[in-house]
Length: 161
Image (cartoon, rainbow, N blue to C red; front, side, top):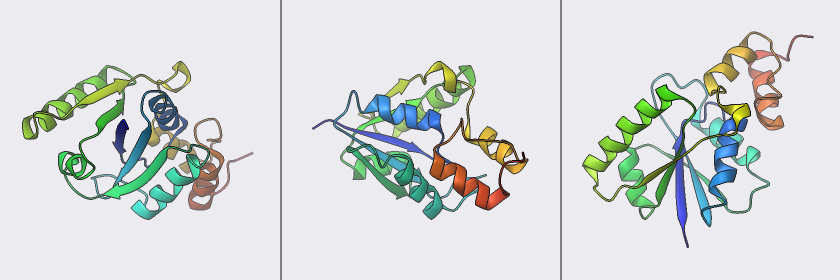
C-alpha cells in the first residue's frame, strides 16, 4: 500500500487544502492528514482543527486525520516513512517548502516529498486570508467547506449581509 503524509497547521482547512488531499488520493492508497499541534501564530486549538479536517474530508474513504507534536521528520518516521505531500501555490511557497524539504532530508536522507499545485481557483487562497475575511464579516463559503464556514461563524459571527 502506498501511503502519503500531508502535514500542516490547517488553521483552518481550506478548499485548497482539500484539493491537495483529493489529488493525493489519485496517487496514493491512503493519505494521513497530520495537523501540527503547536506552531507559532496558530489561532485555533488543535482539537478544533482536527475535527474540522475530519468534517471536511468525511466524504473521502482513504483519509486518516491525526495530530502531531514533534519534528516533522520524527512524525514521518513514526508513520513508517510515507511520502510527504505539500501544496505549492506561488514562488514564496516554493522557497519555504524547498528549505523545509532540505532540512528534513538533512535529518533523514531517505525523506521523500512531492509537491502538488492546486487548481487555479485556489492558487491565492490561504488559511490566513480565510481568517481575515471571516474576522471582518466576509463570506468564506467559496473558500472553505460548510462545516468550516459554520465554525468560523461561531468564532467571528455570521457573514455581513
